[in-house]
Image 1 (tube, rainbow, N blue to C red):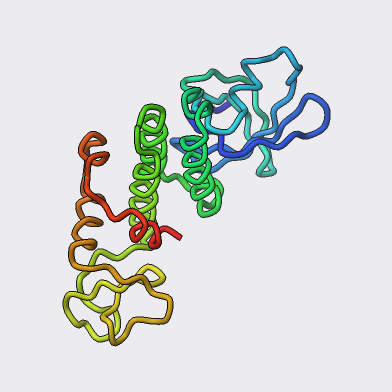
Image 2 (image 1 turned 180 degrees about the horizontal axis):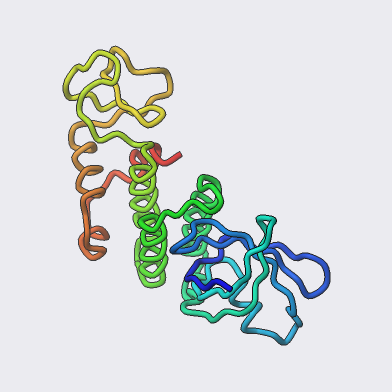
Length: 216
């Protein structure tokens, strides 16, 4: 029997009163659990196995990658996120980025903490778009998909701020469809990545449309 903290990323109905859920866990990375006894009045299990919910999961490993859920408890259902479309949309993008990129059973505690803290703040932030952009850039940096170097990846020219496919280039070497940042916009990105306070992050003067291009 195992127990870990996690955030439900995805939930699929399976047979009668069952769900298969995908959970980003603190200790084990992405795991998949089959949950039974989901009657219409079992609100605790229904909420625990819904995307966005942070909880504790007790389960038993099996030979397959689909493990058996035994019990669990809700730590944070993130109800305020579910009640506002802009926050819910931002949260769904955060969950999808993690779901689409992480391998099963590969621990990523730093990424789990990043997701958990950003979802917590998303409940009250007045600027969900800024929070989503900050999360995505930090996520890309964590995954090695965003370079903060100032030299061209091809010719090593300095002050190169054309970004493409996780690297940056000078104007001469930049591939088609790269995203060009001005020096001021590049500094904004660096400040955003280095920011450790949500209060400070939410008041940073940012060119969001340009920075959001790096997140796509």
